[in-house]
Length: 120
Image (cartoon, rainbow, N blue to C red; front, side, top):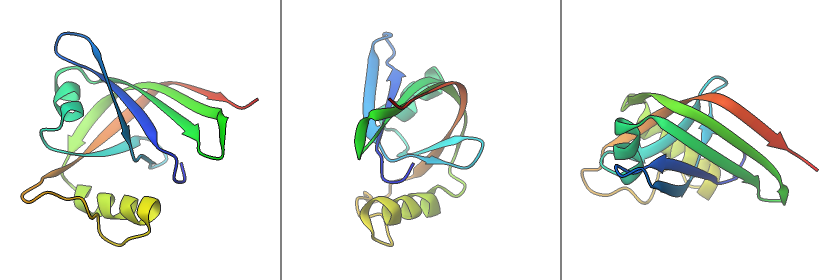
């Protein structure tokens, strides 16, 4: 995914969509989204695991990836190291600089169900 941002859509309790721009990763099987415990997207996927993800190539906005899937696991295991790796990729720094005091990082593992790649 390089440095492309992902736009992750989840569903609020009342069924309305909520969308968040975020860093993203892929481990060869799952899409990995790193968040903090208690954030809106984490609460939403705890209630309803279905997500939609849109990634647009930063160099050519007509190249895009659209993914529908569901969060099959939420884990703290490896989440701190993972956010630091993402900070290195996206910001060029060794440590994630936006961590709040007592923040607990969570890795959301998304199983893709449908993937659409568009390149004109």
